[in-house]
Image 1: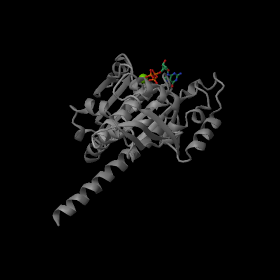
Image 2: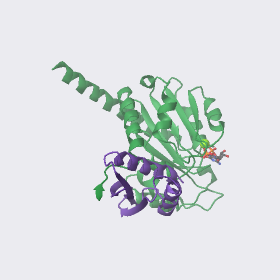
Image 3: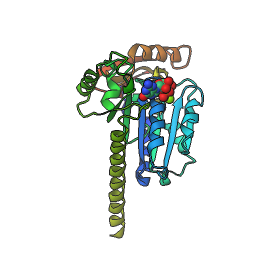
Image 4: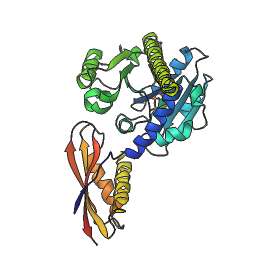
Length: 233
Length: 82
Ligand SMILES: Nc1nc2c(ncn2[C@@H]2O[C@H](COP(=O)(O)OP(=O)(O)OP(=O)(O)O)[C@@H](O)[C@H]2O)c(=O)[nH]1
Ligand SMILES: [Mg+2]
C-alpha cells in the first residue's frame, strides 16, 4: 500500500520560523541572517556596523558557532545585547535555537535583530530563521567562483557583501567576475563592496540597511492600521 | 553536513503517519530533493541507513526523487501489513 505524504521535510523548522516571523512583524523589527564561510569576516563586518550605527538604535545580536563565546565577546564591546549560540556540532542555526535565545528579549522594543550564522555556505541555507532577508558575506580571499560552487545561498540571499576589499591588491581575485557569477545565479541580488578594516563601502551598506528598516516599519504600520480598521467595523 | 537532522525529520514524519495505519509498517519513504536544497543525497542515505539499522524502523528504505530548485518535500510512503 502506497500513501501520499505531504509537506516539507523541515516543516517543524518552518513552523517555528513562521511564529518568529509573526512576532517580528508585530514589533516591526527587521531581522537579517548573515551567512558566509568560516573566517569570511562576518563578525568583523558586524563589529564595524555596530561601531557606526547610532547608539540609540535598539539592536540585538545572535551569533552562532560550534564552540566558543569568542564572537559574542567581540560583538558585546559595542554595548548592545548579544547572545552566543553554541551548537556543539550542528553546522547551522535553526529556528528553534533562535526562538529559545530571543525568548527573554523584549522583541517589541527592538529595531533590528542581526544573526550571524555558523561559518558555512551550505547548511545554513536550508534553515529559515524567521528573518526578513539573508545576507551572504564573501571575502575576496575566497575566490570569485564561490557563487557558482555554492549557488544555493547566493540564490536565496538578497544582498551580497563582498568583504576584505582592502586585500584586493594582494590576492588575485576578479571582482567583476565574482559579481557576474552572483548575478548569474540570482539576477536580483544586490551587491556592496566593503572592508571592515578601512570602513570602505559601509556608507552604502548602512543606507541599504536604513532603507530596509524603514520599509519594514511602514509595512508593519500599514498592517496594524489595517487590523485597526477591521476591528473598528 | 546537516543530513542527520534531515534524516531525523523524515523518520519523525514516518512515525507520525504510521499512527494512522495501525497493523502496518513502513517499508519505503519517498522524498523529493532539488539540486539547490543543500542536501547531499549520498550522505543523506548514509545517515538515514545508520539511523534505521538495528531499530524497529527496519526494513525502511529511503527513496530520493529528483526535483527542481530548493525543494525538500515528502512524496509518498509505502506500507505493508505486519
Ligand atoms: N584585511 C581584512 N581582514 C579582515 C576583514 N574582515 C575580517 N578580517 C579578518 O579575517 C579574519 C576572520 O574574521 P572574522 O570576522 O572572525 O570572520 P567570521 O566570518 O566571523 O568567522 P567565523 O565566525 O569563525 O566563521 C580575522 O582575522 C579578521 O581580522 C577585512 O575587511 N579586511
Ligand atoms: Mg564570526
